[in-house]
Length: 338
Image (cartoon, rainbow, N blue to C red; front, side, top):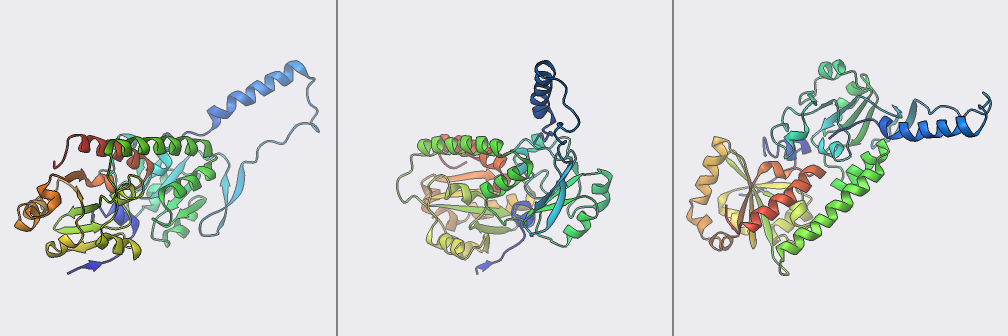
């Protein structure tokens, strides 16, 4: 029997891998050289400026209106940023490395553990004490639980950029880039990513109408992915089409559906992508499925069009999306079931 449900995004890509299964430097170094050069030129080419002619120093703070329409006074050049949410890769892709982030659940689940070194875990749910000890001057909030905003605002200026899944990746990241004055970095990243997508599509050489299904095996459960996770790349970037069953989930804005083995065939496409992990319960569940007659009768299985990915690729931050393209290229190059 099919049941659909929504959970908070930390649980989609946080707990979509659990229950359901970068470095941010200030712009000081970039801005210091031009400022110094200008000062040198002024000293050699013109008399010293009078106090009246001296331009005012850059304001230490500015007002920012966030996603919740809250007007927040924030530092113009934040030095100690804490991130609350499931996509720290959004910041890392822009060269912003927070001093603290929600890593308790996702720290071992994401595709970029190498970029998390030096970031303090603030817990999930976040620990106010841990955040306070970090003395942040800015907190970026992108979590489902809005009740945490007020508590965070008592610690440091808190900007709400979304409520976990509010925006698709590019819109989400560009909003953060505008907040930090890093729109050029965002342009550079997305231009390179789109060029990479084009290259991968060319390598895949899909024929029109090829469909794909993402199946998440998590513990004892099976989930068909809908409008989030791996499907954002398969459908939104690479040109695969959803099957009729998956399209219904997408039309209903469902992130995933918990299914039984018996209805699995209602969702199967030309290609099958399995997201899984190495926990004993997940391995046992996956083995029971793949050893079954039902599974072996699926055309995609019989024709070697099943591809297995670690569930860490079910996140949608820029770092994961980029590394996912490498993984897809590698797996398709090895031709078929892994």
